[in-house]
Image (cartoon, rainbow, N blue to C red; front, top):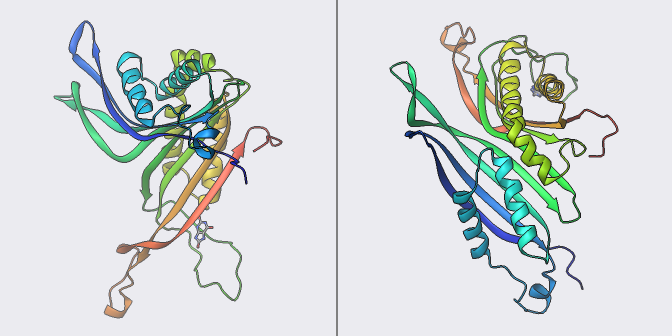
Length: 301
Ligand SMILES: O=c1[nH]c(=O)c2[nH]c(=O)[nH]c2[nH]1
């Protein structure tokens, strides 16, 4: 028998960072993060020989995340992920690679008396901004960022008809239905354009990661609202191609969209016209629709 693969580290390392404007310390920004760091490398003897000598304790990994969060810039999360990768690779010669996941909570500054307040924020529900960075000492870099748990609903402007009909079909075609989903959208940065950790730092300075997040989120919301959707499938494809058009540094866009159903409460039995006005939420079963759209049709997935 042999150990075929292993990695280890710390998950759920959480912090809130406060950034103060040096010229007006009451003007602040915040970032709440949940970080996971997994190390791989020359750790086999800790599994196979009970020899702990190579192990950097997960407690040390936790301390590192928190110390570095205090002493370096954590905006945007892609920069902080690259910073942590560089730190662990440089500090421990037996670490051959690292996988970092950062989830950022959505705190939104709110207005008071018509203008954005200097240091007050509203928690905007379960929606998160995320990044995943996988780096190999050999230089190979994978960088994917995402939005998760962005729950949306439109009460009209969605259709579903013309589908395959067989002896198992009970669904009625419709040109007007409710459409609701909880968006998971992931965009992968082109490894030819963002190919090193230094490229990540440079791209962060230029605003690429914030701009791409804004493009993906705005595209998702705008197309969801504006399109008379023929299906979840067609709408998610349109969202993906628009993001690829807007951001040349992105090579691939993935969506995972549950179809959250609302069932009409039919009141004909009571002599009341239903008129598509009263529905009950139906949590399960739900449709689940996934797609990957790549700029290059021959891209290796
Ligand atoms: O947009 C949709 N796609 C489907 O594949 C599907 N299947 C279904 O029953 N309703 C829907 N809606």
